[in-house]
View 1 (cartoon, rainbow, N blue to C red):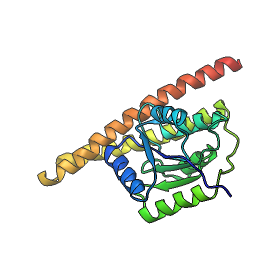
View 2: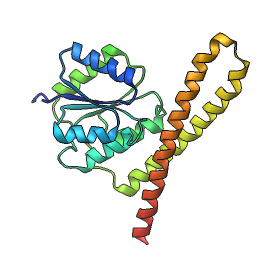
View 3: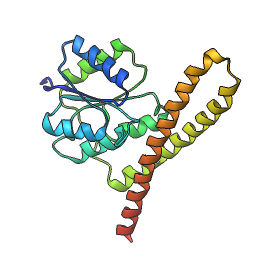
Length: 210
């Protein structure tokens, strides 16, 4: 079986997480290229076909779900193996949707470094994987909407709990929770932006079917 050739593409919007992944992979001798969201990821794939893609899910502009769906719609990039990484989309339904898009593996953050490196080595030595046919647009956007709506409800609950808790905390504990709250606000904005686009596309799909 022929070993997959090309760089590893890491798609991650959080700078310290991206740096950790890059350093870990380069230390093991891999050629690494990176992108900060799905839009940049598609540009990198077009200019330099990677042997393997490692992508976060929750990202601005284009998240990991939409990024991989776009990859699978293109016959030229359909069979590039993908490892999904996420600290946010970790329910069984989230993982099942990721794999239905043609994910090769799904790993939760924070990653176990040894398991992560073993997984990459296994995929690269096993050759081009067999991926399922891409979901049609209605099926993808319906499933995508469900995952986003579920995550938005969870994020809103998390924000409300943190906002209630903050005033009751000792002064020395507040900065950490304040940082968590700011991150949650940013995550919510990204999810809301994705949902707005999903609703628009689904309305277009319905209009063409009527």
